[in-house]
Amino acid sequence: MTASNPRSDEPRAPLGHTARPRTGGSGRLRLVPPLRYGRPAPPALVLVAHGSRDPRALTTVRALAERVRALRPGLPVHLGHIELNAPLLPDTLAALGDTPVGPVILVPLLLGRGYHVRQDIPAMAAAAPVRARVAAPLGPHPLLARTLHDRLLEAGWPAAMDAAARRTSAVILAAAGSRDPDSAADTRGTARLLAARLGVPVLPAYASAAAPTVPDALRALAARGRHRVAVASYFTAPGRFATQCADRAPWLASAPLGAHEAMARLVLHRYDQAHASREPELASA
Image (tube, rainbow, N blue to C red; front, side, top):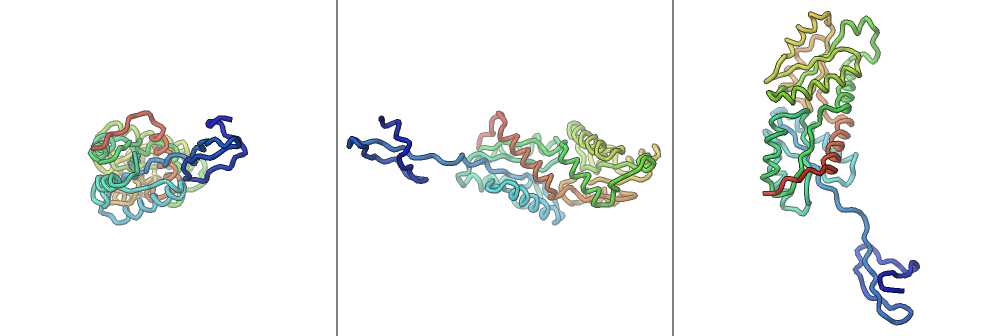
């Protein structure tokens, strides 16, 4: 029996026990190696919210963070904002840089590609004293379409609709808007996913920076004989734009996506994708 092959019936050292010499039957010293338990701690997850002057927005993203924690116990979950609300993302990352957390993964609570995803968040991450990886934005994804559908049902959208009702019904997917064409493409992708669930046309419209506006979309749908139109709020949390779009609804308007369980699952999906990615992390400053 050699030192590298101890007998299988020997007692094992408890967790955290260091290696120590022991004597075998021959009186010679043998080294018992320490046992290794568990896996390395996962990277911390930082939810990156836009920020809003509406106090309901902060309440909503905090509730979403709690749902993420409940789905993945033991995962460190933090919150940082791009603007308007504390903690700001640079402050969150600076605080993490003062603790031995290792790399972190930033999950934007944004619904498509755009300036914040391409420029602002990577720049803040690159300037932080931690190694970070930025996950993809939330949309488009079937879990978003599921959340939008559920919010419409909560607002009064019928669970069942006959053929005659379908011919006169439609949904406007009301989003914030961006000058980035990829952002509009992502919104159209979500509109297609939602239309497949509902069986009626879903037309994207925007609160700013892009066309059509919600009133323009309403007129376009009316010209096609679609007079029973709901507004689906394609915003992660309440705010000025979400309220403005909902106020234009001629029939019903859904609540923002909020802290729906499917949203929490989507956050973790984007986190897991980034964790498994072979893309290099952004080096700390």
